[in-house]
Image 1 (cartoon, one colour):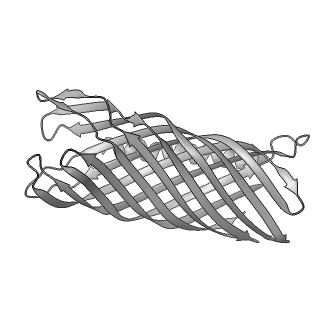
Image 2 (spheres, one colour; image 1 turned 90 degrees about the vertical axis):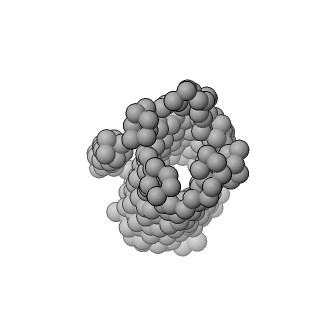
Image 3 (cartoon, helix red, strand yellow; image 1 turned 120 degrees about the vertical axis):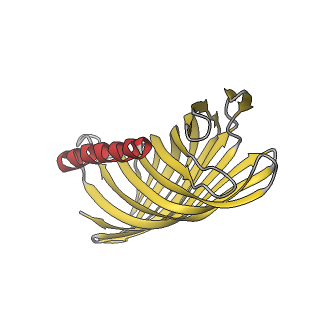
Length: 262
């Protein structure tokens, strides 16, 4: 419960701050809802442990020119709240297959700054940015295994390119892609219901990526995206007299959103 309050509290705080900024400076602001296919792979000594399923998203964004004297300088920011339950195919420590479910609740905030090079009706914008994600993964118990919650936090950079094209007034088609180097990642594992312990490990830093494309016309927007997060093996810690660690993990979110522009 404490983990969920942390995620939701941070989401409301950042959304409130972005609303204040958008009212003062943004040229464009929007809200959106969507659905996504979520996949999580853990590469363990017992084989690949997999999660997969659909999650729901709610988000928003702002975009603007902070300095009138530099109209080519662009600032963008967006937030995303996601939630859902996915299937989890795991194994016990002895290798016995177990099927259960995992519940996800997470929040992402990111911002970037870019420079727009205009060619006729097209803006080519290289950009740099930062993003922070926090999400809870709550594994359900079964008759064979005891479930437990985990809280992940990650800070990563964004180095990419965005291309906007306006074929006619009121319509914009765009695509963006970025390399997302992981700068910091941590996981807190709540085993108080199992062994009375709470473990904290630092995940290995790897490079992920984001690819997206969409269009907006008048007050409506549609967007498809693929965000890939890659975590290396964490440091080893002692848990109940044995060595524990989070293995190398792959996370993919492939989604679609529709939104309204203000």
